[in-house]
Image 1 (cartoon, one colour):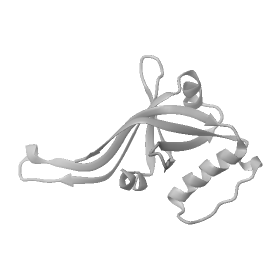
Image 2 (image 1 turned 135 degrees about the vertical axis):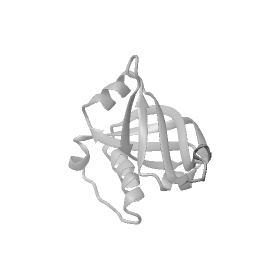
Image 3 (image 1 turned 180 degrees about the vertical axis):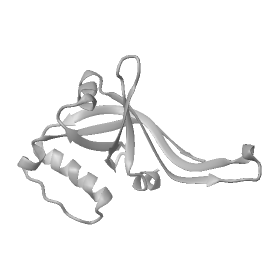
Length: 143
């Protein structure tokens, strides 16, 4: 699973929006705690559809996929596609405390800028929202 998470840039987050789900692709960071709790972190503006839907209902689902490769064959019905994916669901909360926001943002930055320390101020994190998603259940699939 870690290999999939490390090679995926975007998590597709699904939220309840009445009759139809609302799905949005976002960049993410993650951690696997010492007790094997998978946690995703995302960030964004303090207002918008994603934020409002999570405020209404913090239960979310997600999907990530990577390692796409077309498998060809002489027969059309024998074509296939290799991929690796993680799907699951969890509970989203908003991180309010500035130092916790900074720690989550550092995790996110580490995913894309390895071994580089970034410094955030309270002013940097004040205008954004950081969402923590504690994963309840997930399934890994490789095809």
